Image 1 (tube, rainbow, N blue to C red):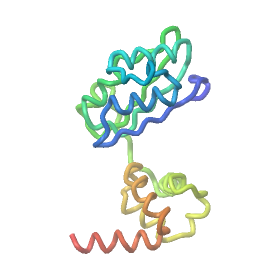
Image 2 (cartoon, helix red, strand yellow):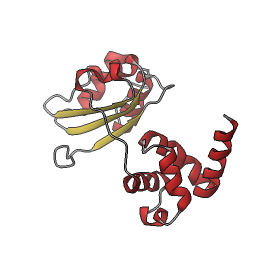
Image 3 (tube, rainbow, N blue to C red):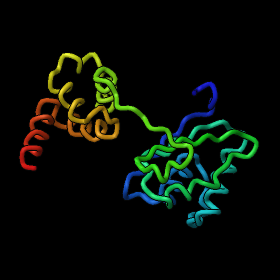
Length: 173
């Protein structure tokens, strides 16, 4: 992937609440696009300005956790003139994925531990011996999005306390 996109891979996190234009503005800021003396550009003008900054570049944009058509539309017209702009979209919606959608299988335990460890900022080897970490991967059914959420809790409390908390929540349901 890095050989195909030598100018970089940019990960853009969406989620339920973020607007597409908000994420496009964040990308513009990351790329150093001038906002014309502080004036907020509209969607089409902003996409054009971002496209100009990407001209001649080969970059991959990962549009992660798309929930709405509005989020997709904000990036639909974005191109890199004279370059190659790749877009990889992750979504839980078959409708949004459209004809190019590819279902992703659940992660096996070892791969799930590696993903959990990565989100926690730890080495996978550290988690292999922890029964709590293995149980968390199983509870998440190998779903990377769930593992990301659980990892945030684990970073604050550790795997065993996070598991205990989640088990308490399950019992209350």
